Length: 635
Ligand code: G6P
Image (tube, rainbow, N blue to C red):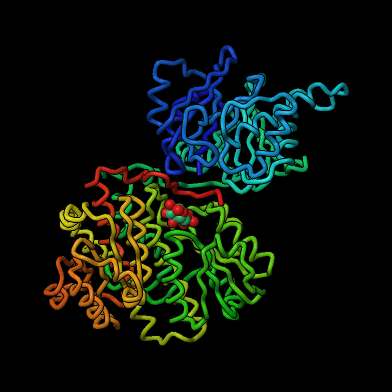
């Protein structure tokens, strides 16, 4: 959480920083701030505001925002309420150092009291202010050292290194020294940080992810844990370990589709991303679902080609068990992945919340495969879970969206979902991308194990290839769902019920509604309703059933009867042409016929749209719901 941007170069920093903050606002949006140093006189100016980046812009609108060096921050509060005082950047006691931080300093209370004993005073309630004072403390000590062992230009890097040695917790920081306006220093541990470099080292861009940088340069350096970087105009980037040793800089070429970073004419990112699904799922399958051409636009998929599965075939085939670790929506995708892998590969799969797994005493050995699913690739709990599993010798497989992210870099192998940047805080296209990739993995592995009959393999591949077109058909009902949503804004509680492959979809539908409309919603396996949630059902209670034509269809109808007898209001997601359910319930939304194992890719779409429209009807901020953040880099 929290987004950081830094710039040092020849252009005006302020517009770059503000645009970067807008791109990173998905990471947190309760307060924002910027620090700038003018190019002519090196006077530091800091502007902050409670609220969104737009509020910061309003505050800064009549101020002097010139300067070619600056740092900026958009916050998701951990220590201290969202306020101007607690907003970053934080300034050191003497006013010389300014710092922005993403993460949590766990031992901040101890450090703060030690600094207070040395005469430091604090203006905010944040853990971050401790960090800037601690760096200043070491900076002053180094400077006053009679032997002068550290050169002036190295003081900041050395002080940052000494301070970070004492820190327990997670950080991505960017520090500005007003006495050295030719350099910016940044560091990371367990929180992401990317540096963009231009030709001749004339400019450096620092950010929590590549999105604020991509329009300026493709040359990027992803910092590793416990690395400190010094960006100095006209000089090569210098990278140090926390131990002081200088390490080589590895520049990567990163290609981001910039059109994905704006709303493309939609009122919200979430709606755009819902509508993106047919095309991004085609991208996700491109080159992985291969086959032969029939006519111009028609082809028959013949096999799944996944390099990660081919490269690690032996280890995957002998896997005793697969443990999926993830959080939130990615965890729901994992529950579907479990069913797919168990069905096609006959390998036992467990699905764990990464936050629980990382501290658990789960028995893991080298024949286990731990599969981390993450959209952002930066979720702290998921990252920690894979580190724990790695120590125990398991093969770590990633299913990640953000290319080059921490999880992608910390796995032994993996498959990107390639659905493009997801900006709306409520995850949509990442979920269907994850389910698609999990389907491909299950099919590739099941085929390699000789467990999938040729006929079934071909049928599933052919159907998977049709899924994007079928999602397009579901999306045509957007206006109908918008009208339906109006009828449900009164509700305080919702129940979502499904079975088999659609039980995780019920969980995901409920999560979507909770996240953005603030209506309490629970997802349940439909048959489990009678063991508790049925007590909630009355004429006020909307119940969403996923009741497509599959194995347990008749059982679900019985569950519906139980709700109808208690006067509950039912909205059912049904297969096209279903008359039976239509005649029983209040409302239906139809999805095209498909196989049970692929049905979540269709049934989740109306639930995403329902949550979206309910939130819009309630006048809520769909893309930035209260209290949430898109990338949870704290535990
Ligand atoms: C946050 C987001 C969710 C997301 C979860 C896991 O809570 O708001 O949308 O599902 O983190 O994130 P990941 O990036 O690991 O998939």
